[in-house]
Image 1: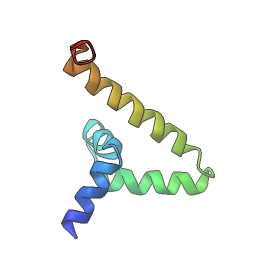
Image 2: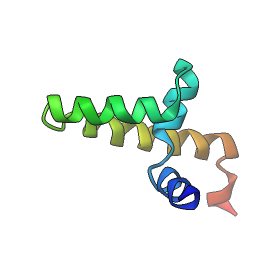
Image 3: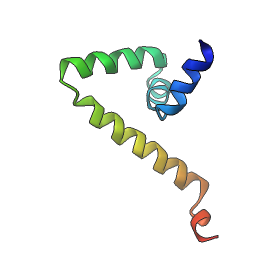
Length: 71
């Protein structure tokens, strides 16, 4: 069961764990709040989640440096 959870966390871009670390909450609690908000607002937090995933990937790219593309 632990390997399934780790696989799902890696494939979900780590947005919930990142937000949990920044806010000082457990990532599981952030996931539950996200699910509840998605049901209450008819899925609009999904757009915010995808934007956050995109932003986290861009930040990782910028931290590594841009020289990867030019090699």
